[in-house]
Image 1: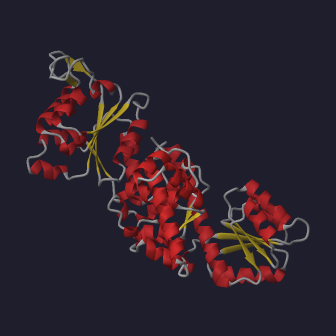
Image 2 (image 1 turned 45 degrees about the vertical axis):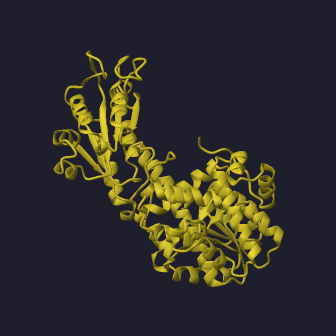
Image 3 (image 1 turned 30 degrees about the vertical axis):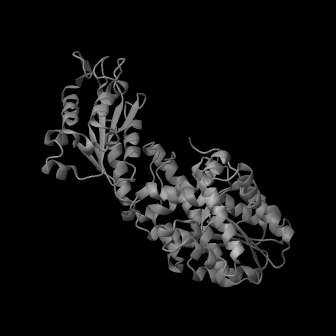
Length: 484
């Protein structure tokens, strides 16, 4: 999972996605236009929608107002006395790069549009405008700006407060987790993290370590459920030469590797009883022996354990040692599932969009309103990990800056890719549909092959030259290699 900071906002995601006019949270809009009639019309229209409106008669006044006030959006006229909107736009972006600007004009040429977009305009609206379309554009731009601004503000605030890395969330349940982590991190106490798969248990463990006096010592994670008992014990405790058939040399265990730092035991409920007994002894005495050894080794290791099952139930049913449970359960951190903190979804999505666009060398990507709504409505059995994978998929398959619901997995949107394609372009020919599907399949295969065209061609069982011809015909951008 990519490195992120603690983020998120609740009302933004829900009200923006719903397009509810009565829940704009007093978003503030600056109108810069020299025509009094235009300013009056916009003031009436936008005030009825619940926005706070400020007016400037020219670009110079607008720039002065930007210096002393905070806005969520600027509506900027193209043709004004003095400096034109195209001259003012770069100055706005220089002062506030992330502030969305919608250009309005009575006359617009293709060159004007291109120049405005290149200078950073969010959109271009021609007078006389369609009220519903203008309001939809404003709602979308304000929602994105609110998400981005709140993301940045929370990063600054919570980084100063806790310096947490890798954690996303501003819901009440996650803020309680952050508070608890901040309290327990400086101690030596053992911590048990409970939560469903994909909720970020290892990230919480890393946050505890990073904010503890052990931060300069190793953080050593191990998935105890991924190893057979014999290999797990050797991995944890090390062994002497000849301890078992394949032990041709002595080897240190992870307890020694983590000396002075933190050992993270994930899926601890999967451990066998014998291994549990040895873990208990280390917790009690801070001593252990290599497999096959006779000399005790003393270590200073903080243990953080994690589980996605009910350990109390495992104890009752005789699958987990009661004494070990109480040794581990000194402090418990319960991570909520993503479905119970849906207000965290918009900025989680925003972060992953930024991360995977950067990783793949792409321009910034944003979600359409219907895509964001689909993400908020979905129940996320795979939690944050599933959301991250869905966003990565959308970024990789996208051919433009907006990711629509057609690029999300069908089980999230409740419709097939073909349905979404036809809904988006009902007049598409069979050739057009097949071409889009072929492009998507090739991009997915290239992504799975880490953008290795030779490997992708082998898996498709076609010559490399044929694949390269298709890549060229379908205008597929070959991206840099992803994560190894």
